Length: 403
Image (cartoon, rainbow, N blue to C red; front, side):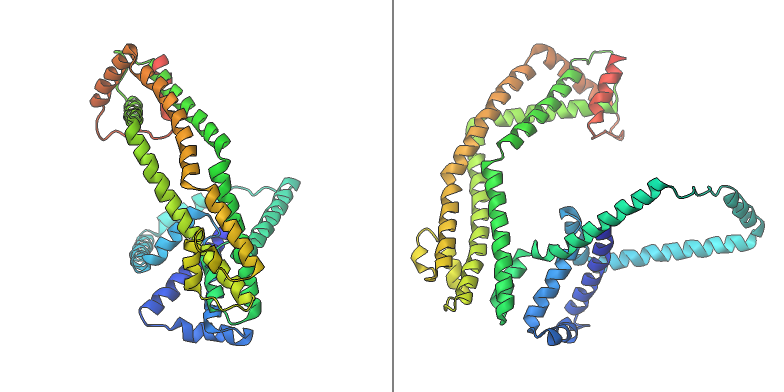
């Protein structure tokens, strides 16, 4: 059963796709006909009203998780093709209904018999009981929570839209609200970043233990393989998993290659995070300067934020701007290249110790013999046979080999 937020997301996505594509194809001027009418009674400019509407719509589109948000964006981008698919689908449904109606008109007796059979199979609805009422109450409470979360969501998402409000607003209250929301969201992002980089050790250890348990299960299934084992799709899946483990181990054994990839990924990660945080801080510096009545353009704020360790003196002479600049510099020092790479280097050393043990285990003569047997059995499986991809495939192999 679809949730309340999902029922809100779907029509909102459809409405947003219709409005954007009608505006893109010059059939409907959204700015002049809708936004100006909404902005006039609220005393807002057209740009402010447009950003507020986008904030509200974007919060509705993103209320059902990240993957559904991606699907909604793809839906909006490919909306003309979606309309074509809907037209073909409903044409097929209508033609099928017309065909069934024609058949029922030519054979009216068959329709009466099917109607009687369906009436005989209608289940009797149970009488309402206390558990049903309690479940309905739980459903109402859950719906109320979802409504509250939906109302708060515009202030927790769409950070860049709030940043653009800082640029285009002409009202002091909108400026202060936007600056407060951006500051709160910036603090949340800094906390999450520090949590991921500095406090992800227990999570990584737990993930490593799960991975090692999974690998031990695969090796336990390999130990049961014999010449008499029947060639099945599960056996082929076991061979593919073992071969994937072998390829990953070969890659991790090359220390120089792993270190180079670690450097590259570290630089890409830090570059993206540094640029994004510099962008957010630039909007904050600009907003603080506007609230303080200091002339300070956003391009100047962005350049200062991008090179904040060197251009700290170019910040506005406001105590809050100086405090934010200090937090920005402390964040850069905490998440420097050396710190991140040292952290990754320690993790790589732990991974290499596990890799050494797995390589020795994979190089064992008995395992290599069963690996060759698996390769022969996998080659005997037809190519069109479905290969299971879930975790229960190894369990099925173990049960089959035991029997």
